[in-house]
Length: 430
Image (tube, rainbow, N blue to C red; front, top):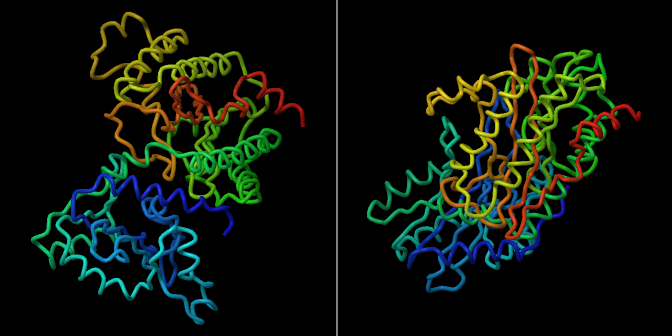
């Protein structure tokens, strides 16, 4: 394993927190994700179901977690089913988890081979009153491919139509939103590696370099420090490309006088950092670039103070919009009298700042969590304001990862260069 796994105590505690919220005689079944095909006999790289990771730490395909706290047989209260290894699998794919390894990793005593699932499943369904099934419920997700969990849900409803079926996702969203110390440790390591990558590229970027060369520098630095790779497809946009929010082509030459937007971060131990910086290709900000950058930085710093326990993200976003309006007026991009007359449902700042400012962060980059519920201590959010001036081919975004504290917030990326002066100094110290 490339990364150091979280201790089994983390997963034992996570399961306790989940089962404490279940109805009596409840059965929970959570499946690993599919390995998705490409073409011919090719497959995509395996990405584990985040809820399986959160509850067991098992990062292996075809695994099934079963929880039935009220089972009469103590051996059936927590069960993990994993794919049995063989000589053939060992030769072609590498050995899979043994039962002992799965127990050590997850803290689950009763581990079975996958072929034993059906017998146990039928037995438990005869005693269960409520069945909690999982699905990828995320307000930003557009799902066109049927998952292993949805196929299983359809099968359950067909074979056992009289059971009471419950949604596991809302419970998992609340649990996963509050990060434990172990989770924060993995996230901080992802951030540390991200910092190393950013410092490396500050000394590498110059006119004539292509965006994909910068991407190569980053992946080298990330992987050599045991990251699994990028936390998400890297956004490396120079000039006008910086105004494309999800630009991932990364094939353009960086030219003298342009700004380069870098939304790039590492993934370590299944936890994701999420960093954005915008730097001058030639190592020196122009007066206009500095003015736009510092406007974004002022909004960023204000947001770090605003996003506190009790805040509702949707209400916070409206206040961020007001901050951005003032900055855009100061930059000559909006007129004060037009802002005063604007339609509140169509605020003018959206032309230059069309996206949200903060999202949950953790096992997923856009991690789960109910943004209509108050922010709580222990949550981790991004703060990422930006200004995109397409007519000037200038886009600036700044993003750090913030741990919400009871007394004060902690900027987990406070050590990563962010001020104009320190960025210029590092870029010109090579």
